[in-house]
Image (cartoon, rainbow, N blue to C red; front, side, top):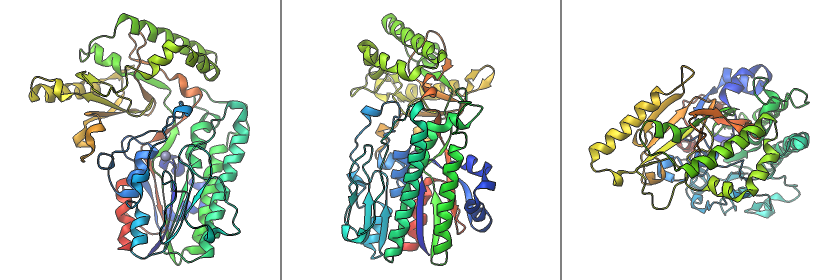
Length: 464
Ligand SMILES: [Zn+2]
């Protein structure tokens, strides 16, 4: 059957399931078609997950791991995503002679020639759209597309919400206009706004959040966004259900971002896996964390960070030392794997071990110690695995030897704060929504997809 395929970045299974009463299209699909959880990749980030959805390759096969760091707006990567051209599902469909419509595909920018029409927005910065065939868009006013452009502060949040809601609506409307203008065998729409809304608005909507904003007219903002998306897709379904399967998935879920941190380097020092850091480094780290703790207590993390960035020695410390060096001579080290989020990675450098047995035993020992880790008598690590037990592929070098997942309320912190193994996540005040492992699989047909790794094959089955 021909397909209309929509990716809603960050649509969460648990959240959707809890609000089905207010989402009529999705609840209808639950009865007539499919509504089930869809596991993301490890780590649950947009760039590796969309790359997997587009190509069917796992992260150790496509080798793209870049996470979007919402706390480091100015230094956001301007990655080269030209490798996607020719490898994505809509290219395969197009080259089999079918006509495709592709609107707002994340990362796939600029648009390229194909049998049909492709419209993309820039990956991380605002700017002009790229359209493969302008003649097909005559008379249509294009909305904003592409990646993140704003980092709203508290006082700008209302405007941000209204504007982002409007953009979402316009993207759906333009997609429908284009769909009506021509006849297509396959149509794809990317919606990135839901993820953005959840990152910034979570603490306005969740009364269990430590930074919950009591007085606000944004308490329903996230649900409103879900409802708008449900309505718009419902309209498409009603018009096209006889001709097309309507398939809606997300690249990962979304929920409250971790409120606690796990000091991984302190854990490794305590267990004798790495030597203690120098006194000077520990002293600077202690100062930085004490300052952040102070800002957090007075709810001024956001303005305070700017002061922190101006203190050059601290800025240097933020970016150096704990990151991955080009030539890694450490036996065991902690690269930035997923920012301050529940997925963590540990590098164990085989070249620095005397024997393979020693290398294997050390990895086992770290995993066992991680699994036993407790905070106030509760286990903190959901699982810890060797990379080869997660993914195999020719580009697996960038993937740390050990991967673990913390409970959703903990994030990995690579700095040190005295002898603490656990602490508070100071940045929660700025970014209160965080990714979850399970997104959604919604369809007007029944399908058995369990993971984003299954999506490419499922789509291609009908276009061979
Ligand atoms: Zn995403």
